[in-house]
Image (cartoon, rainbow, N blue to C red; front, side):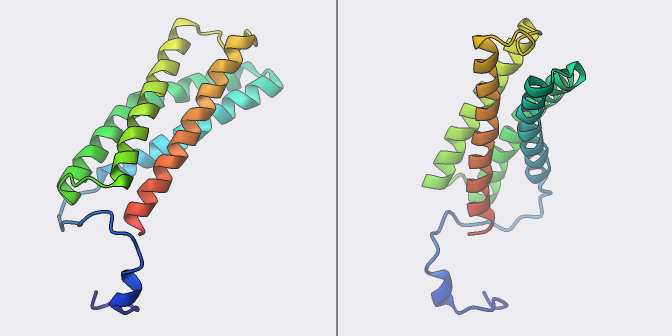
Amino acid sequence: MINAPHVDEVFSRFPVVGEQKRTDQRHYHSMLVHFSIAFSVIVPALAFVYLVTNTVSIEQSSYYVLLALLAITPFAGASGFLSWKSTFEARRSRIFDRKIMFTVAVTIVIIGCGIWRILAPDILVQKDFLSYVYFVLLVGVGMMTAVLGHYGGKIVYP
């Protein structure tokens, strides 16, 4: 930490989440994750706007962004796994264990919502109990993604 503006004593107060190995790899994970984060927030936001305004094009936009999220999520998860493996040599810690757990959970919910929406294209339009269950799941995707981002931030900015 030669160029750091703090003495080593300051850094000893932060938890160690892993040893970072220097690589010349490109960081595809960052790019994929930022798309996933944006899509995970946009989908429930558009669904909410539809539920309030009944604007069909907004509801359809929510569907198309969900399809994009469904398409990119496996790549974001896989790139995170590969990044963890190459950069941190797959060392386990509480943060990485939580990221793995939330990645699996959010992926399952995204796939479930995607399949549900494909099989029942009018799920939000019906505005019945199941419509609101579907909406709550979409909000859950956004919340789980926020948790993943929080833990990602702890890794990148300890």
